Structure formats: C-alpha cells, structure tokens
Image (cartoon, rainbow, N blue to C red; front, top):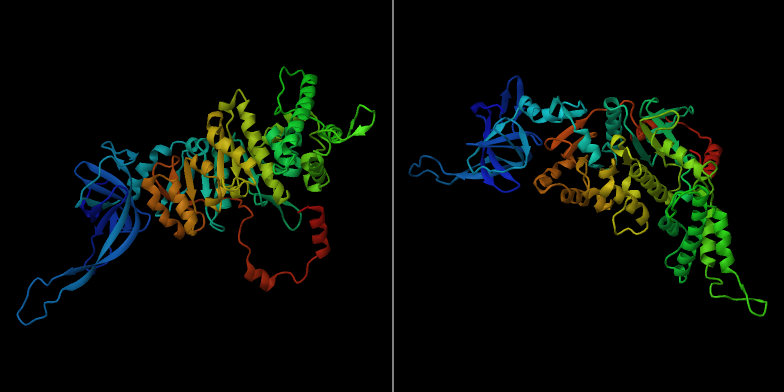
Length: 563
C-alpha cells in the first residue's frame, strides 16, 4: 500500500463500530483538493471511493458513504480594543466512512476489522494500483465482469465458485439494468466456462424474442443457447409430487377436504405402484416420478362419489356419496381449461420413458447441446406460472440430488422476476413454488445446484431464499422499504453502503458478499447482444411511429395465445 504524506486527505474525529467520521483537509481556497498518485488525479471525498486509515500498525480500508459540511465557530486570533469580538463561522468538510477490511503486514487485504484506530488517525487517498492489489487474488480465473465505478481503468473479477455455488441475488428497480446484468454475467460465464449448465426462467421473453420480420433474436450466441417455450417443454402432471397435486386439485377449505385427500392418496398410490411394478422398480412412493393416467384416477374417484349397492339390492347413499363433487368439479374445470393443456394433457411426455429426454432437454444435454437453456414463461398464463416455476426448480434440484456425478455437473437456476413466484412467507397463494425454491436455497449448495434470484421488489421475495444468498448485486433502488430490506440482509458492517443505491446509473451496481474481495461499486460491461429489455422510446414512436395496425392479427394472436 502506497505510503506518502502527500496522500493524506484528512483525520479521524469520531470512531464507531460500523462507522468512522473524518474531517478533510482543504486547499488554500477552502475547496476539497485533488490528490495525485502516480499519473492519477483523485478527487478527495468522492462517494464510493476507497480510503486508507493508518495509525501505527492499524491499516484499515474504508468506503466514503457520505460527504457533508459542518459549521465551525472560531474566535479571531488577535483582539483589538473597540473592535467587534464576535466569533466568525466557517465550514469544515466531514466524510462518513464505512470500514470494510484491513491490510495485513504482507500487503494482503482481509475482510473485517480487528483493530480500530483512535481519533487523530490519518486518512489517505488510495490509487488504482493499491486497489488492484486488493482485487488481485480473484484475478487468476479471469472472470472479469466490469470496472470499478470510481476507477474505470480497473477491471473487476468475481470469484465464480463463490458467486454461483453459494447463491446470489440481483436486486434493482425497473430500468436499473437487471436483465442487462444477467445477460452480461451469463455471456461472460460461457466465454470463460464453456461447459456451464445454466437454466433461465424468462417471464417476459427478454432473452429470446421475435423481431417484426418473424426472425428470432437471442441475448446469447445461437451456439450456446437453447430456447424452449414452457408449453412445448411439457412438464407433465405425473411429475408433480403428491403435495403439489393436492394443491392443484383439492381446496383445503372444502368441508370434505379430508375425505378427498385420503381418497386421492389411496388412488394415486395404487396407480403409481402399478406403473412402478411394470417398470420393475423395487419400491414406489406417492412421489415417484412415473406415469399415471389422470382419466383413470378421475374414474375411480367418481365411482367412490356415487351411490352404493344396499342389502336390498338397490342403490343407496353411502358414506362417501357426494363427498367428491367439488374435487371432480375442480379437476374438470382444469381439464377443460386450455391454458392447462401443456400440464394436464401432454402430447409428448405421456409415458414414463419420456422423462429421460425431458431431463436432457432441461439441463442442456439435448440436441443440440447448449450451455444455456432459456425457458420462456411469457406464454404461460400468470396464475399458472408459479406451478410451472415450482416444477422447474424441483426438477433442477432432483436431477442433481440423484446424479452420482453432481460434483462434476453443477447447475445454475436463474429466476427472473422472482417475487412473482418466490413470495414472502405472508403470501400463502404460491406456497408450493416458494417451498421448492427454498429447498434449493437451503440444500442446493450440497448437490451443486446454484440459485440466482432477480427481483425489482426485494421485500416481496422469500426472506429464507434471500438470507441464503452469499452475494448481493444491488442496482439502483430508490424505494425506502426495499432499501431497508436489503440493509437488513447484508452484513451489519456493510449496511451503511446501501445508502448509495439510489444514485446508481444503469448497469452500475454495489456488489457485496463472497464473490468480491471487498464491497465494490461496479459498472458492468455492456452485454453483446443485449436482451429485449430497453425502455420503449415514446417520443420517437409517438412522433414517427405507425399510423395503423393489423388489429385482426392482434386479436387472432390473443385468442390463440401466441406471441
């Protein structure tokens, strides 16, 4: 670390566990000076810049999180009889510093602060060379994703194993650059690690879309990506667990729900056991992913719901007669709803043998093989998306849970718009999908399944999932509730850094956690190609846009549910 009296920019005047205050030196005109280190001019006190606090053997790195001026009262040095002796005021620049780590005697950076300075400690400016030394231990893998915002010439490399293996979150309001960041990360990932296995849940068709001429445009190179419409992928009903099927077909508030659950459990168990016997399985459970005929299940339930033969030889009302009316009505309503056809009436995945091909497609081992599988949920009705998302999340986990080579085949699941299907615990409507993703968050690391949570509403996302994230990529967030929520998730020593989120530009992020050696204000590289997430130019389109549209075609696409 550079040692020079020329780099002194201030002195510590207040010391707290998670905050230091420093008064800054000024030039002859009372302005914050510019410090020159090598051939680099550094503006003193710039928000997000790094400083070093030195005092004897104490050497701490901190980030400037606030700059203010404080009025100071001083008396004239000479008092002349008859002259006004009133005190004169002037301003003193005060910097608020958040300590983030220490520099060891060998020059290496360590997170955390073991020894704090006392008041009077020197505050030094830090140049690019010194900052580069702090980042150099993550440079060897070459996973560079952007530059330090306050030092644009300095590339930043993330530690990929920590980023993907310990889960991460990309948080930011609409227009802050979340999809931009996801695309940049994935593009760089595949460039450095061509055998990656990444699954993206794309709710709005941002990573693959049709141009006006009908051709498809991808946010990734064609050679590395496989785009799949969720309806065409067909994740069929027989892959669902017993609990998920109960959530789909049984209303727990129904007065006869307990009868429906018991009967459904019995019939489902028999059907799956019969299929398991055909396949030669030694053991079959209610959750074994084998085919069963939904029509056969319905027929058995319907027979229980009818009248029974009495001792007189006539049909009479039995103990279960009419108890399954609501179950059958609920099942029939979904069977008759075309939106559920991809789930309840599969055209391809209609036998147990089709599971292997589904999983190959799912993890990118299909034809052609691909490092990135984009599952487009934009064509799936909103109220069905949580069910589909839960299935995808569970399949990703189960695949590696039963994969003996899971350590050699890690998978990353990226959940765009996560608040829509991984909600806060207070939201009971999507409990199934939340539990599926929470299982990955809590246990996925052991089986090589990483989770990336992308959301514009952090406080609406499951606290269990976010609490398991080891790295937070925080883009612009201006909502006070979201800022407070993010502040509660990050380590206490880094909580004060959240205050800078409101002033970040597009694609600029505050990166906190295990994937960076120190909290970093990072400008992500622009992805090429870019996702379909740019704001629509109202001015240009309202000035020079089309004067008419083919409304009949729009109606046809709406009715046929084809975008």
